[in-house]
Length: 101
Image (cartoon, rainbow, N blue to C red; front, side, top):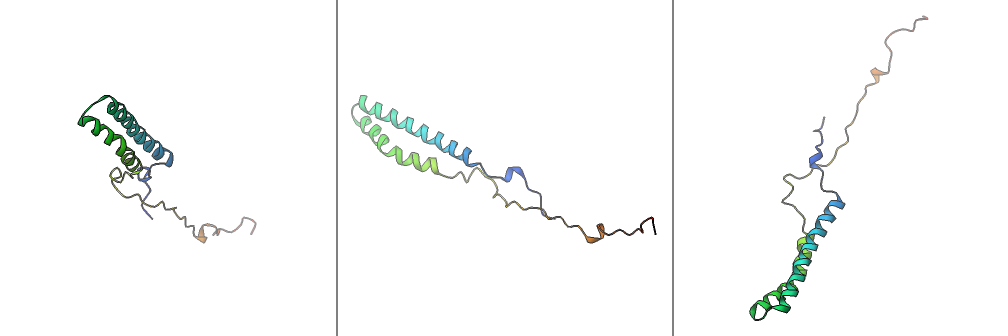
């Protein structure tokens, strides 16, 4: 008989995965808005650093949000296998004689 399936080998649900990606993207966009605000109020070389962060952060935010978490899963999930039930024909054949005979 095959090895029993473990619930922990099941991957993350699409809804949970989407929620995690949205959280990562939201945090990145909050940092981007902060960079834009700081770039307006700061002078000199710091202004250019904040503008660069505001310009390049959307690309990295999308890449990080859509990155698969391969490091989170310690083992490759196994395919779910339905168990097969085998019943021999002997289980249905009566070996005793009916009472009337």
